Image (cartoon, rainbow, N blue to C red):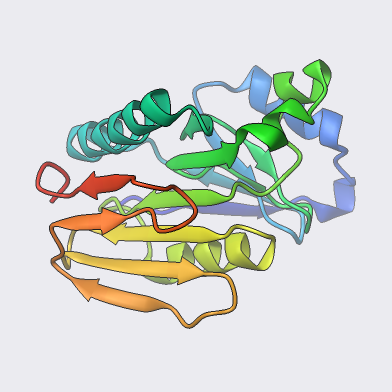
Length: 191
């Protein structure tokens, strides 16, 4: 198992622009920054996880293309959350109104908001505790609905605003509820 590397850089007072440049200059690295200012370096995913992640993004994009309610983002997209953390969920969605309210300049860099919907797909190198903390961070920063897909245990953890986490064992589908009307994620190709 490859571990995530976390480096405390808070003493350097890295600005938003500097962090963006670090990411731009190191495109081969998967970088995030937590609310405490620690730089997080994550290993790339393996083939199986990449394939499943692609399937998740395909299903979400296909739904969005049909309903045209917002914008879909993959794991390469950075979001600056209200708590100053920079995160890149495996899949994310925001309503079109949020997108339209962003300036062209803000659309070009890390999006300064928490997505309304996120998915994290657990890969073999991911710590379940770390992913759970990340999911809670999304919710604490305004995300309405989040799914943690734990392929190893065939479980889904559903995170919602103002509700307790729900755990489903080996579901075959997931509903986008009122956040993503009529969206259904078929899990057969993801398990």
